[in-house]
Length: 550
Image (tube, rainbow, N blue to C red; front, side, top):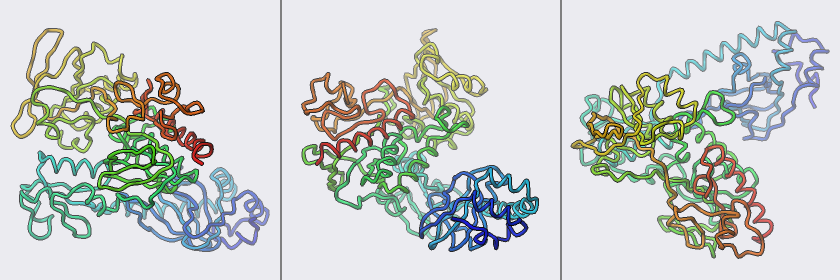
């Protein structure tokens, strides 16, 4: 418990009376931190902290790399910037050794500052000094973790750029004929045959690397640390990450397998406006990044560039590509869905060369001044149209239906109407694609006038729905005709349940194997519902572990 003597020597409180100090001591929290324990995380709510004993490290994550910004010693404070700006903490504060820290909540501080102008003046001066330091830090030119040289239309280069972008690894990209290449690439420039060529910050050069090799060198986890886990989550979208957060927080040995990058299809959304708790909206990659940090902090392992070859449900083992075998007591399927492909002549040869399935946000800068087309009328298409409207000369939505109201949320329709460079072509469809090395034009059929017209096209993005790719699952796990995993009552109705109890709501036809998110047979396909199901899957996995897996 705090006493007057504990805080009397703090310079900020030097002018306070004994009564004020006593009141402060009785209304403040007394934090006893072990080495490595956090007083507050980056993004934490504002409050005033005073270091009484020990040493606190100030850290902030830049581009996925933790960086130490300074230290706080006894009698010093932190929290002045969030209090001055009414904002979350821009960095985190972690005990470098056993430490004791006093926490004054924001409301109590504001009452104290109003009654003691000297405290407010000292805090204001310190806040201005620290804000100046943060401004200087933000003015430092960011250093990309990867410099890449490769042709825009090279499939390997496109795949690596998408991999880096989805995993939020900063990179500089230049084409082999870029005039600035000799100045920005130390030593001999890579040849066309060597491209895509990548140089890491430590000087390592990789020519045409595989994603897994690159991931390992960038510090991304690609190998499991254990041979057996309590729960394995296959898929790192919103449902999978939610399951990872709840599984790890409840003490389960938790591992997530992800083929490319955490976030799933939601990770490519430029703006999710209706997700609870984000009044100004949140981008898909920001939401995924926060969930990923949370899951890792709680102890979940997240493997990228790994896919499942097969599942042995009897032995409770998962066979990964590359030959690794991991045993797990429960399995949570959160593989989501993949974009449905269009069967139009000429399309396949332009995939990644002007035609993209889903929102390839990394291509946005390359659409400046161009005419961009999107096929589809759902929310994903609407979000992508709004995003690309900030880059392209013109964005056109093409859909077969006669109205957006049937498939798109009202808030998106209203925002699209407010964009002068967004057009909607109803009762239309793309019927042809043309170009030499990359897409340059498309044919659009207008059903209302039965005419086909050719249009210049800098990029085409396809959002025509998605399907569950679950053919790789063992036949013991029941699915419907479209590949969606049956769970709960649907398993019973299909006659695929033989256990001596009823299946749990999210349990598949195999006890201990659960499904959540878009891969599960359900009429609701939303980020919020996927997150909810991911957390529920962990609750059911707990029940299974307590009652069945003994």
